[in-house]
Amino acid sequence: MSAISWVEGAEPGSDFPVQNLPLGIFSIDGGERRPGVAIGRFILDLPAIADLLPEDCRDDLSKPVLNAWLSRGRDAERALRERLTELLTDERYRGDVEPALVALAEAEMHLPCLVGDYTDFYVGIHHATNVGKQFRPDNPLLPNYKYVPIGYHGRASSVRASGEQVIRPKGQRKAPEAAAPEYGPSRRLDYELELGLWVGAGNRLGETIPIDEAEDHIAGWCLLNDWSARDLQAWEYQPLGPFLAKNFLTSVSPWIVSSEALEPFRVAMPPRPENDPQPLPHLHSDRNCAFEIQLEATVSTAKMRAEGIAPQILSRGTASSAMYWSAAQIVAHHASNGCNLQPGDLIGTGTLSTDSDSGLGSLLEISRGGKQPIELPGGEIRTFLEDGDEITLRAWCEADGKVRIGFGECVGRVVAAA
Image (cartoon, rainbow, N blue to C red; front, side):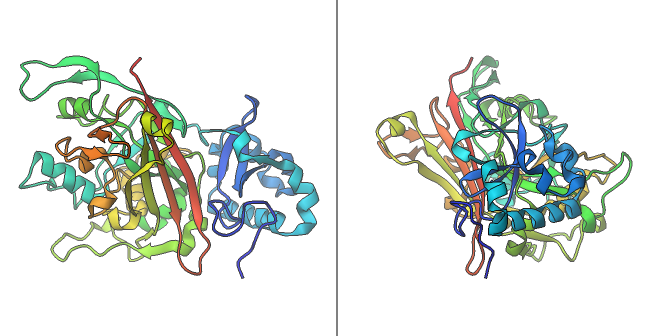
């Protein structure tokens, strides 16, 4: 029988049962930022129970960011999980631990780490194909896509925790028929449904990370929304790729969900089509795996909220079926030239669209580049996001005989350009 916590709301079926125990940083009423663990409808304040934790982890779990803790690697993480499971399931500890529980609804969540670097990849092959078809109908994937994980360096300073307003970005855009570009608020603002990886133990400058060791450098997972101004992107992206179209905001869910928590949902990566090239040796592993993570994106407009209409599901699919390259492969590739990854670095997977219309992870795909508007409850239509629209991303793992593991939410509401 699976362990069950005595904490209210932590029963199997919730996002945060005792089998999950994701780490995050929270504060109450504008007070100091503190590490905590999500359990049921509460946060366990770790500094408040420091005397009950292993002595060698108390200092790192008292800081306002988790970089130092993540640097310690997966052995330290396993030891902490074992102790927390004991504290949260054994009634003998309830009197000592229960006073350190803070209601999730009363807490403000923050970025769990000081993000030194942020890199976004492009591992969703169906997304890459769908977008490529809009520009190159006969050759949607460029020749390098199936040989090398494609990525670009994003802007770490504009990464924010769920709940941050999405201020509509301004920039240059050029309509195909226009003689010259113009400057103004984006007219084609979009979301991207992604997963994020938090780097744990890093590597030294000049050293590589072997593919079979790459997962040991992943401290955990989150949801990630790489907000994108498609009109700015279309004008600026050649020849050096994304810039102002994406660096105005990246939203992440605030909890670091460990690979240990996801382990029951490990699956093999989908086999490559017969005619596709095999990965080069530094990216090849017989143990290459993924996790069966369910993804969902919904939209709620200002009108829908005013009329009490439930959010509309835009996308629902499975991450493993969308990824051409695994998490281990993108970490190994990132360090394959000797780039030094550091604790608290953030890596995005890129948009994770499935091969069906119900699992498309961006409005660029859903509306076919704006050519096929979608109808929302209440009679509104959308091709791209309008002011007042709120996007909510969710993720979870769930299967018969296994305890559900949730990621929580990643939320952002669009407001008018400054």
